[in-house]
Image (cartoon, rainbow, N blue to C red; front, side, top):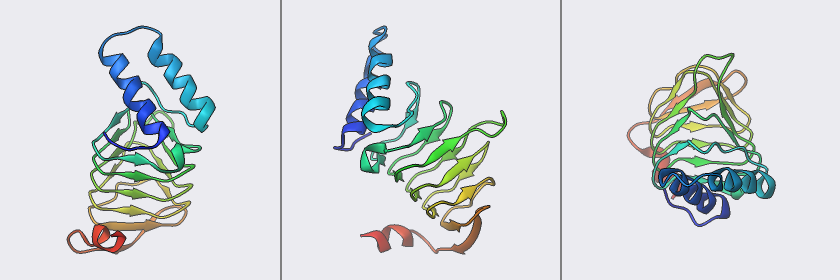
Length: 152
């Protein structure tokens, strides 16, 4: 996991302390994140290398069992959470999740997909898809890794 913003550094510290079995300090870092960034990031969160919470993760809520792949970009006010006790999402590599989006339940967001701002995603999304709306609907399936090319 990399990233130069405050929240990504704090998540790295929190995870390191947890791995080294240092008591209490991971929880203190978790509360520091909550107070400074208004984000709810669990101690056991799985976030891959190169993933980043933009805008210091402002308003982001992540389920403790959610799995976030590598090079994922999560904008502000995003919720990645459970749905009535039905599991947590898996976000695969190179996914973009727009501001205010909700990804809920035991679903998979496929590689290289984009979730639009304020979308509510309740169903599994295939690779290379673009999802918008409430409830989220696939409006386009891109060929190859076109999403990354467009963002650069």
